[in-house]
Length: 107
Length: 118
Image 1 (cartoon, each protein chain N blue to C red):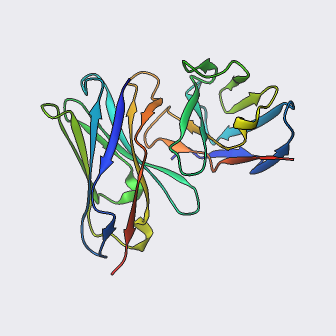
Image 2 (tube, helix red, strand yellow; image 1 turned 120 degrees about the horizontal axis):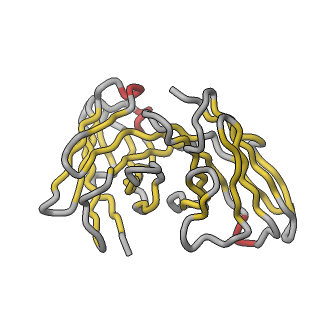
């Protein structure tokens, strides 16, 4: 199985800050990465797919980059509704696997 | 707007079979993979497998062949069965639509908590 290692596991930031979350795959996966946001008691919500394509309806302050094994999710100008947990996911091969999550907290 | 809704028992006894159904509304089940994902009490997400609208399946080897998935295009729903459950199968279970090309999970159900307990 392809392992997805996210860092950091948690991060504190203030409204208006920028934050970057990284995800490293245990092997080459081209650009087959998606990112999700999850709020307590809710299902994950797709933000980014294909490493850098913004899902319809997602604010442009969210962006993704990377290819191969190293990927990043950047959130610019943090808004109060952005404080949540974020997961990366690889879709290169079965079984699909997720990172362990990054909790974004208000400082 | 595509919507998914999981349904099934919230409590299952150890060694029995967990059965869930996901009903799709607002769109056709054709042309997509349909996935099951579960989230442990600790927050980890585990992809369990998917079923193509034509009936083919892919499952996660970590579940040791305990998973059966099926689709009913006439009713626009798909189903999951997990046999020989233990307390480790206690989780929130989600169904989701999976795009065939990118593999992204773009629509999710709200999730249903299944507890395995005597």
